[in-house]
Length: 148
Image 1: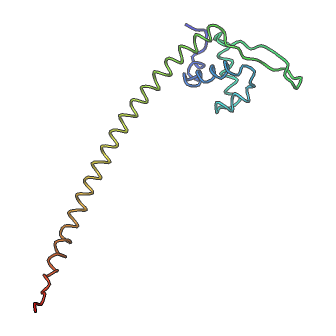
Image 2 (image 1 turned 60 degrees about the vertical axis):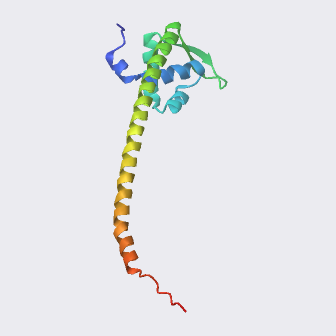
């Protein structure tokens, strides 16, 4: 079992963990502020997540100087981080496919319900209109055409 506290594992959902690992592999020199904006989390939360990934040995932070002569970090996935990203991606894909299938079933059920309601409403409308239509026909007497 990992030395990472349970709190860290609970905080990092597979979704966030996958998105962060993917983003770090694509943009290793992105700042935590940039990463937090892309992921939609606070800088503090992102810092916590990055430190959790570093503690697991999935990410290595290296110092470099950026163009503004400030010290910055590059976040590099380690071999175990690349393996973890792959495992998480498989779980993520499986969960998304299950969600997609469940949504397709729910959509089919909703379409059936809507069709049933529309059919029922159509019958009710036609039943309401039939007596009016019949009454209007009864009021119409045949026209007497005078013959010459």
